[in-house]
Length: 301
Image 1 (tube, one colour):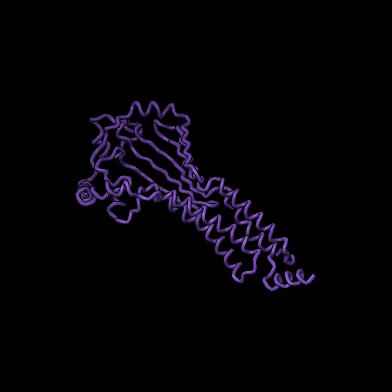
Image 2: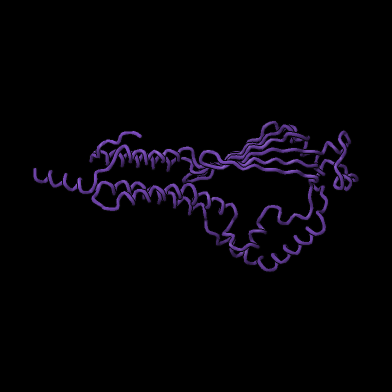
């Protein structure tokens, strides 16, 4: 444990300056960064790579997409029949069809009405960050005055700032992507990718995923493989959908494998806020009683 120096009034100005500097430093940096790395490992699109990056700061949402080794993917897209598909099993089709019909009849009008009135969640998240940073600086300013609960106020402001960055803002971003509040389960199911799928273009698919934690974020690794009916001759599609093609056969070349990594992290500069608790320990504030005694002695002189 580091030795803690004796409290001094000059430490207050130092703490306030450092807190304000870190708040500005974090305010002008990226608050949330999401990246997707994907690569075709097998099949005709291989070895095409896709890289995308989304960075969100106080004003903008910046998106950068880059495709590498795209020649094979270009010829794959030209060769592939985009209309090739087979119906899913009858039970799934009937369930999806009945659910979609009821959703269109009951909730179609509500979706149109709520589309124009959805709250801008990302704007709300940005406002929460700004309020939290201002409160953090003001709580440190409060440490210069005689107030009994000032340490508790500063701690609460610090925890509120971490919560705004780590919980509130990412949640607002996800709500922004979903396009609404999603209070009703029917709306959530309707907006889910694949909810209205009645036909499939890939058969004999195999998908797996692995979730892990990284510094200031999470990471999801996913693998997908299957046989693309768009690369199969029309007369052979039913056969390929019924059974896996034999290795070395004509239709075996329709096999495609894809690996991807999705990572979402808080901004890299946000960890600088963790310096503040150490600064509080190394630069302690003068206790209220000691502070009042110091003021009285100065007045007597």
